[in-house]
Length: 231
Image 1 (spheres, one colour):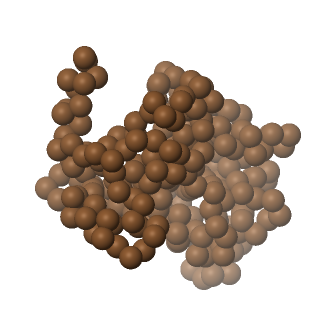
Image 2 (cartoon, rainbow, N blue to C red):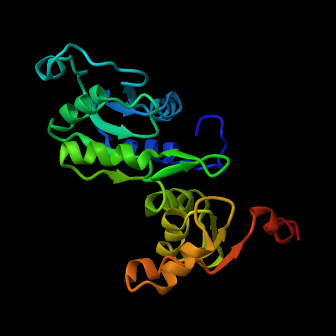
Image 3 (tube, rainbow, N blue to C red):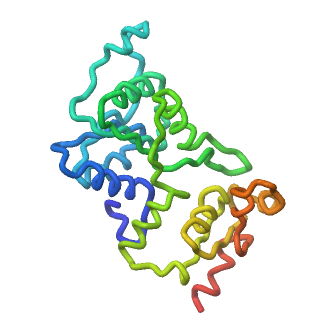
């Protein structure tokens, strides 16, 4: 993304690439963004203007007032990222945009929660995506892990050979699942969300989809990989 160089492929950057593909040919396209200024900057870097970033309080006292709030013209997509200003008014506006013909619904990722220090966590982007999906009765196009699109972005840039590529991550349901989906070797690092108990539960599960989300290897910390990378 902007200023990140070509070795960092975040879900926001790949969301911008996706919209550039899908909205090609649309004159002056806009996106209603439930997300951060950084996400908006990624979209604007590929020619998609952003509206909706920041707080959006309820306008009026009744549903009729909320539905009478003005909409921006030329909005071709609703993009849901991590938005600490997520509100009922934003949800209402997003649903109204999505009722317009051809408006896309895109989610940057489906993380259910974001881990903090001392075993604490906050709600992740996936919770916001689900709210918009439920209200609009639409299914979002998901860009980040475990969607294959983000891997394809990297592959197209570098011509990666999956047989010589390792996926390293701390979440079974995103990182490891992406690796499995794309035919990569996988390494789970135990410094984040998923635990060996989670791995064991998947391995012993009767559910076929869960049973395949098992890493090839695991390490206590990503630092354990440094000797191999330096060698």
